[in-house]
Image (cartoon, rainbow over all chains, first blue to last red; front, top):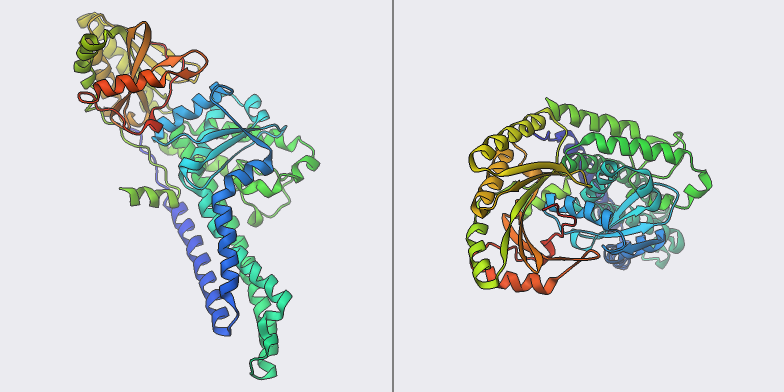
Length: 299
Length: 190
């Protein structure tokens, strides 16, 4: 009997991140409301942005990545591999898209399992073996199942909200220009406090989103290991992809950096980037986690 | 338990659905109807498809299945083959002119895999019927339901034929209602 280990630590960290994010956002809004900033209009704009992101994310992402949806007839082998994973997990099959690219990578997008697209690059298909390709598809399918686009979009909304308010204040002087009374020193204090607060909120939520994103990656890796029953397949795919990527010139990689949160391995070259700022755990950390899962399976 | 699924998703927890085998046998009686009403005759082969996984307990289970098949093939004269397909899935292929024996054999192997804890990795059981062109009934263990699959050349399927045969057997066969979950299966070795 295979017992799949549960990763409580991961869930606790995820819950913690979400909780802290929520608390910070709440405090921020509460303070703004107390000061009397016109939040209603801002909120409406932010909600609109969120809705657009939510409903059109799949098309926007595919379009910006130059991904082309492919039919079952065009890519029979790839489709069948994904279909079988879906049958094992009893999920509707997401649509498939191809990106013509020399970087082996994959990403998933879409607001819910029924409206999702999994995209793979042409070089991913040509580089990986069947087992590795299946493991990568299982990783992306786990993102779909976990509704990661929704989770990250919502988390992103919180940080965007803070950023919007900050920018708004810079443009309109925090709405204090109307001169509704109050002493000068109060106004001066607010003038400093609001932007400072916005900046701090933005920074913290930004870091928290990166952390959340990394936890979701670990969760998707685990999902892939469970779905395929073979943690080592994803491990070898990760090694292969990261090896290929470091060989590709930096100039090409820059253009896809915005998509990093959705990629299986982000296309940022070099290890100098602080881990704290990364959307993905390092490949070493992911391999170690997969190895742990494998050990637990055997025991 | 929709809320539990939603929570699992939110926290990124993956649990595979369990296999149910209860409805597998219903194909035996449905087969009689198909022969009578549609002139659809069962083929003498059937298959069970599952995903091999990386664990020593799986290796033990696999050996056990081979011994089991060896034993039952002497008793019931059911022939068997174990192959790996292009997607690296394992197929247990059984051959027997008696359809009931075929169903029993598939049931036995799936039961063994489920008992050893590999039910989650059962992809499907496939029964083939024939009248001019092959018609497959695929049993999905996660849904505990059957669905029809009539393949045509070039990865196309004959949906009209599938719906026809579905409406005819609706009463005696537990059929998956949501057609989005009628997963196609190409290159069936049965």
